[in-house]
Image 1 (cartoon, rainbow, N blue to C red):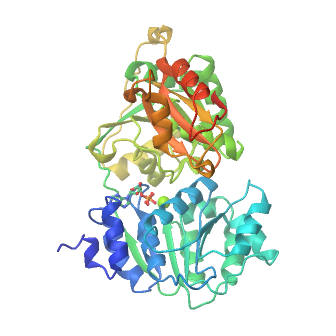
Image 2: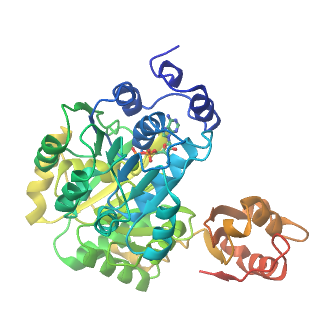
Image 3: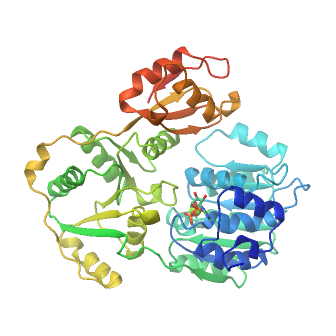
Length: 460
Ligand code: ADP
Ligand code: MG
């Protein structure tokens, strides 16, 4: 038995079996370092990059302390955005699927209060949510935290950056002091240390260094001056390298929206992701990007952080990041799991000092490379490989991915290879199909039946 075997941990046989069935063969580095402390009940601060498996590092901890027969909130997980909260809740449900009757409730802003109040009344063991909405429920006396044994702050640095500090502290006041507090963060600035000092009890500090050395990600830097040059540089890089999926980072929401709009005007398959968009648009954008119906996603750090987007082929820093750690984080979105990744960073002479800092941090000389020749701007951008169809029916209608796949590929249907990712929500399903097969797929789904019923289907 090795140090990274889950079976080296004091976990129940059910949990271990479930991990095996989820395909978790061994612990990731943050899990191997954190879980022994987490399971022994200690407070812990864990610092590791996105995608390193932090959710299971705290999820297994809180599940192992849970009493399923006790109908009160025993764990509270706070996340900066609704997308992250949804993702965390989903993963916890997966981890908990062999423990009978565990209720995981998400409480986030941007969605109606009514159903949340109903769910709170019927009781939950684990609440995952965003600070604002949690505090709202607390203030109105709808949420009781007296039974909380484990408090988790996920992506704590982002929550502080988003101005949630006071809200967090108000929430923490409502939780008994004998709780376990687990804090996860990609970076560890002073503000986190001071919050930790106030709300944690002699925390263990664990840091997993980024495994993203320059070997798996080729980094390229370009000095440009004007805004027009910056925009053209993005187009040139996309037209030259033709990545299937690209994530572009902007420093502000406005810039992200503007860049996305302009890329769209010049023929690119692109969408923006930032906090000014409403939740539904953000959800749909993420689904379309991850199922390859959108080739380029232009995002702010806040909107994109922590999201479980599969590896992208290229990352473009429209402006070089303010901090070295954020830079490392951004480019870590590409080159995952052994795939080759490319990162392109743009800067002007005013931003040159950041490049110098980054060079010291990465311990390498950074030189500006030449951009591809301008005549490339006349070529046509790649279209996304897939398109998304939305079906107005989901889990509540007992639909499963297999039903949709079956309906598409059955009698005179399209080929299985032309069906991509299927995302199923309570009332909707999104299915990606090859762009060339959209018409046929639409026809098949709207004329045929799913689970004996017709559903409205349209192309997004
Ligand atoms: P983080 O919160 O650090 O960004 P996540 O917890 O979201 O990372 O995990 C990223 C992905 O890795 C998820 O899809 C998760 O299911 C998967 N994962 C986590 N731990 C393991 C493991 N030990 N073995 C295999 N896959 C894992
Ligand atoms: Mg996470």
